[in-house]
Image (cartoon, rainbow, N blue to C red; front, top):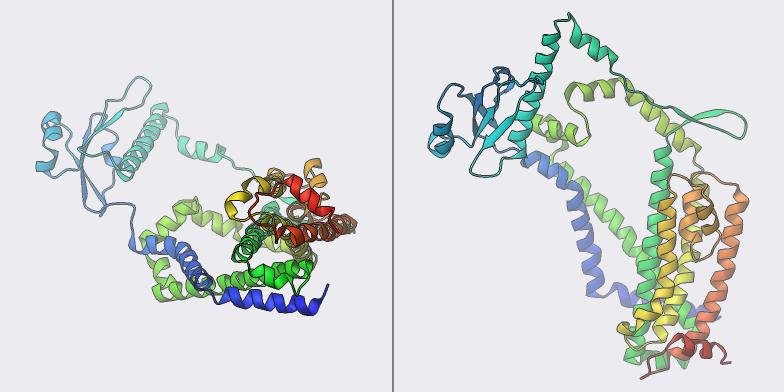
Length: 452
């Protein structure tokens, strides 16, 4: 291989692609869309509301216990119309200024009630939720009072219990460290997804680039002065450089947009808004006092557990493994995609040839996520040694901690397979890039491998 010529090809490929309008548009539009998606919840909480203001609801409470639990506010105003003509109210909702009529049945033998609503439009979830919540509280209080046991509500509250588990991992020196399993999962998933996206999408870019150059006949001129393997490697590395540039720009621009929008809109305003704060608590899965109690009692412990877990992860090893498996995984698949691109005249002809290449990487993705709760599963262990699945599957195991020799053995197998596949792909590329007018098959590619 002539690295000087490969360097020229990398520079040409990089310069040609970053100057394209499509690259500039995708590079700068994508972060805007991603940034807007990230700040959209903030915008909704500041300027949007799930409840319509000024809704009047008529209530006919035949049970005598529910109406007092219905509290009005600026969004929904409940009017107790018990004793009035229910049919008249129902047929004249608009003229009376009501959005809906809610009727509550008398208390039945099971000490419960039935609720029926009438409206010209489907009843909104905000009204339905408020009514059913009030009815539930009313029936619960009524039932407790019917037992005539002093302090029954406190007794029931004291019986309720929620247990939790505290996890410790035993270190090699026999010590114990507090851990949060979800932290391992999150980091492993992030690294695995990044490898999957890079390898699959950028490998496809290599194939498209080869097809485009073959179609335009530019490659005929280039092959006359550069070896096929130099041309293929230069193209693969050049596209990798473009992809990494684009990815880094996406990260930087997205962070700038998110921080800038939040600063412009004012995050303090969000936290000072009662409605937004209530929505934020609901999105977090907690309500009112429960949220406050949880934060006061568990926040410090949770943070300590997360920090303890992060301290146990060997980040230099994890990041190093990510870079190595990403680089050689990309080279492995990109060389195969380049070989397929050289064997066809247009992208429509790649459908059959590309299936055997995409199946292993898709299988690796599904195997990794099926074993997310069990990183030691035999299927994941075996897949982490197979070179076509190891870039994704091994990352799921490295984060959770494995003997270093396993990672090095897997990486060695991947490196050897990558160089072998690049050699095979280069032989196919050398012949296929100059073949025109014939739809090639795997049988043809096998013949090309035998050419000297």
